Amino acid sequence: MTAFLSAIFLVAGAALCLLASVGVLRLPDFFMRMHAATKAGVAGCGLLLIGVAFAYPSPGMWIKVTIAIAFLLLTTPIAGHLLARAGYVAGVPLWGGTLEDQLRGELPRGDFDSPPTASLGRKTMNPTIEHLVLGLANGPGMEAAMTSAIELAKTHRAELAGLAIIDTRTLENVGPVPIGGNYYAAQLRRTLVAKARHRMAETVQSFEQAAQHAGIRFSVSVEEGDPIPILLARLKPGVTLVMPRRAWFDHGLADRKIDPAARLARHHIGSGKHADDDAPLVVSG
Amino acid sequence: MIAGTVQAGGVAIAAFLLLAAMICAGIRIVRGPSGPDRVVALDMLGILGVAAAGMAVVVSGSTAFIDIALGVALVGFLAAVAFAGFIERGSINEEEEEER
Image (cartoon, rainbow over all chains, first blue to last red; front, top):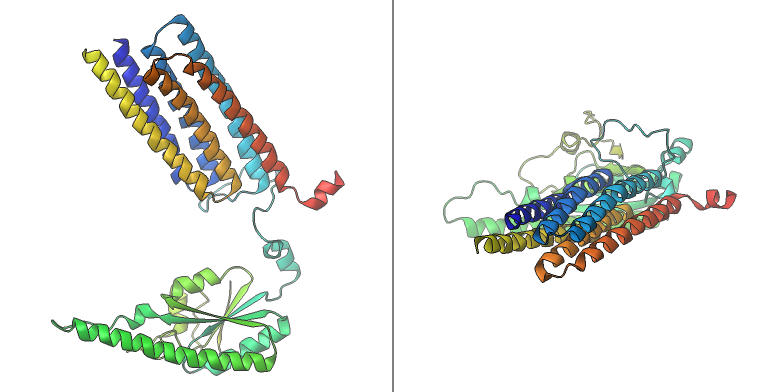
């Protein structure tokens, strides 16, 4: 009988321990992970120890197991509470979906792993542009975007980062392929991407010349892939993005016209307002 | 006979579940992303260590391992408390530290 009980308790305890660990691994923020580790962890460990006591039942064993469980029940909540308090005071970020922070104002809360320039206080005091990103795309409006970005960089003394992207997602979409046409479709994709690289290189070159001529700090980076996630990754608070109004990262090679403002607005970058003039798009992160 | 088989099977299953749990906690320690996350995963690993010491009693048949379980629980608690103090003090920036 005790063997059955022992097996049941051992498996149940180990399963709860696994559940707690999966919680530690999968839950989205520090506080939730801590709650999984302490609650389910203690329950699982306690059940497992009871299973051990059933496997070797003797008064001494039961006493030791009881002491161990009592000790776990006493100390783990304290440790969890201390860790949560320390994490909160240190400023470990809460999960994005958190609705209410009841400790706000009760405990001091630091800034965790974020550079002081990015903090809100300084930004409201001194609303300058700290980082400028210029989208480099070959097409109409690029010259205007380049000059206005260089002007902005000069006035704010910001570093101008040229970001050239090849929109392989659009360029590799060559439309429906007839049976037997896969080879030609692949060739078409390769030619298009190669052409796009060529045109992008021209734009990068003219940007480098213009920036050197203006005497500002600048850098150039080249990326290939879907431009939206790349732009989203760059567009942090304090970053301002300048884009030509009529040129997209297909560098004029896609078979349909792409409206950058509309494309960006669909992914909640910028306001998406339609303007008829060729003034460059300016988006703040 | 049956009882022995059931217990051996239960021990084997429990051992595998504990191993999986330890791997999960280990992944969280490696992945972070912040120090406190790692400390919580370490705390979890400590609790799993207590459970593993309990398993050692059943597997080896030596009841002395239950004392080790007690000891691991004690040390794990102390480690968590020490890390909590470290995290809390580590967050205070240097200007405030000088004022104290």
